[in-house]
Length: 131
Length: 131
Image (cartoon, rainbow over all chains, first blue to last red; front, side, top):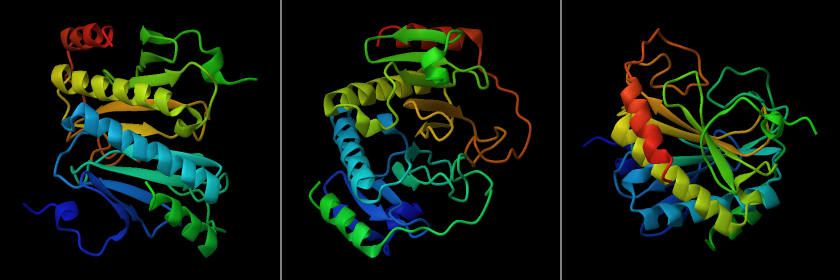
């Protein structure tokens, strides 16, 4: 099987447990992705208990993102059309970012420079580490 | 307050409880949206218990969608950049639909005619009604 999320080696993992790992994605400061450890495609391929454990993590990550990164909005999405291995995007959005109010998968409207500081990111990571 | 989801009157509601309602969206057959009854913007504005109740509904709706509608993939997203009133899109995707493998918020690649039957939709609705 050639799944890039099963084979991934150079991820910036900030938290890991038996069910999933949490990584930071370079494109946007604090862009966070939860990747399930096992190769399943859909949210409901998890057991109900596993789905609730995942949901709790999404909830806590979003709360930490709002507290430390202070975006105007958080976008959460599980698509997996390119890579059908369950992963959830948790994305900080700003009212004048490149795509706003459209999705980050839409055409860009403008250029945007993120003002997120290293200190904010570090405080965010420190909280995620306690998931 | 002029929130279109607080004021909405012509929704195709197929299930409703104290926390949220579930509607069908015209654009794509079986495109389903969960709309929270109260006006909050973010997933983590819910209590943790409410978030888990919502998550359980997403799980069951996706399972029913896979069973009755038989899409190639399900996309789940909570964006709310246009309307910051918490709502979750649950979208059946097909390998040759207009946007695939991109998001439904991306540019279209082609035309696509959905093959979903009224019977499938009805079976799907019947299952959602038992949430």
